[in-house]
Image 1 (cartoon, rainbow, N blue to C red):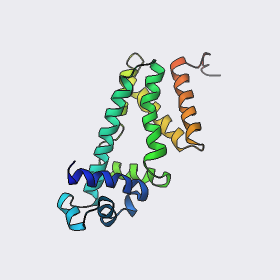
Image 2: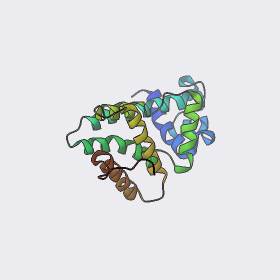
Image 3: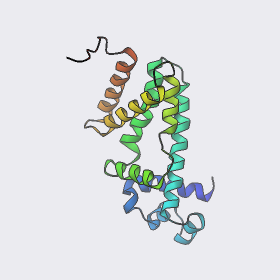
Amino acid sequence: MSKRDDIVTAAVEVFGRHGFRRTSMDLVAQAAGVSRPALYQHFRNKRDVFTAVAARVADHMTEAARLARDAEGTSADRLYGVLSLKLEAAIGVAGARYRQELVAEAAAMGVTPLESGLVAALADLLADTPDPSDTAALLLASTAGIGQSEGTPEELRHRLRRLVELVVGGLGTPVRSGS
């Protein structure tokens, strides 16, 4: 692994622990075990480091989503596998108090959405449904909501499993329209 890769690896944790605003180049350099001048040989500023971190996370999520999509098991298992990547990111990658800040900062910078690989994998799994991409985006938004709700990680995982069961099995009764 290159020195640049080592710095990005260290920066993932630093941004997750401190958020974007409180992360400094000093913190990144310390975590990576390099001097500030060495850090600046690889990155111009904190934005460059953050962009590299976002790209790394997106690449890992996309690859994991492909693996979950193509795994053995039922459709529900594979759907849960892809969605659980979003849930685990929501409850684990960044401290809860910085999660929204990091997402907002990435959006403000125009960084490629971290979820594009998840949407693609979900849309593949939902190809036989109407509007697979819209349905995939809805499921990801629902998963994000579950990740931000109160409860232990086990409770949140159970809620996600229940959501998948409802989606795959339908509600079991017709939904009435109008009054």
